[in-house]
Length: 494
Image (cartoon, rainbow, N blue to C red; front, side, top):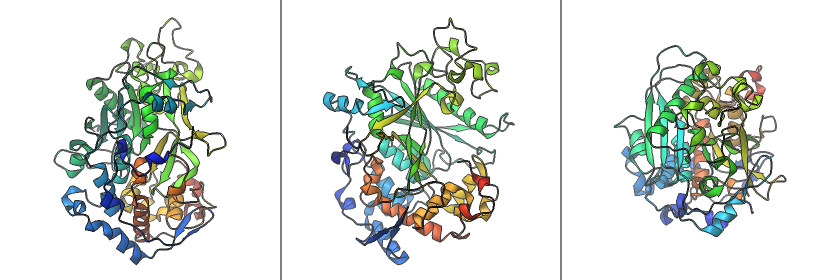
């Protein structure tokens, strides 16, 4: 197995289709000299040059109709969406046994025992995606759509009228909006992929707070999967809208003989596959190299609550609370000590079990030769992507572990991840940051990168556009998380 990014994949869109030549030939930045700092790249380009270069995209007729794109999407986002929305064949859909056999041998779980072989049954497994969605950037949604183009049988998004902390928000993806048209009514995720957006309304008090509100929303995903025809032998992928498996691993899951996906043998004791995802902070050129994100997650339909056999469903009393994760004695971490030994299957997994660490999982890696332990990533996390700094501050005030004074702080003061992003985008040294970014251009990275990031010029267009957004922020850009008097207050990730 090689590095995971064969030369034949470079410059291709999802499914193997080539980008339009006229778009690929337009430079978005000049061929200037670049300087490397200890942890981030510094780009020798003035703000005037940046504006001149980014507006090259205005020459393309496909970007002239402003009604095609949502508000606040800049030219870099329009460039990405224009390519993501192009009609194209799914060229890697045909099963080629030699290629599939090589692919299967590249993946292994965290015990380093590669038991994955090509499954020569002549067809691919069906995969259903389920995700929460809110104010996620089109840079994220477009990249995920291109990565998975033509693979998923169905994509279900759930949008709530309230944030995780209960703050009211206006629904974004409703019928008649450009947002709905792009996400649902187009072929963004592929010509044969059904995309739906389920609305979630709950005005009562939530026992357990924001996390339980999230799990209530994810329960809607499970019901939708059942309605859309998920079977025991299908696969569910549970994610947030800024996460995706790599395309290559999705293809492996569809065709390889992976022990967790053997329907006849799966007893639901340890059915979950967890992706080891590479994290990008706000920009394709800010890839974090000192952390991995352990989502999204895969599971066979046989073990998913609402799809599998209801005889093995836990009651609310057997959980921490309604819609919450299972009580300890019904989890793999505690060897299912409270579960009747005579049962043929272990308990079905609800959304909270699926998303949280309750034991019973394997972390998946790609075998690569550029890392000493050969444990390459199998997913991507597009973290803190945004079109406006107001959107970003709203996220940090109303989701996850809220920072109530985020609207009074510089972006880099709010959270250590944003501190890293600002230093990366502005080319500042990051030795005081909690994490480190790739000390070279993404193009020179040895491993697998998102399909969308192969689009010629896009990664730098987004990077420089983000730089302009940060420099223009009304709260300034000099404040940093690592210099604040109480930096631990925003420790937890959103």
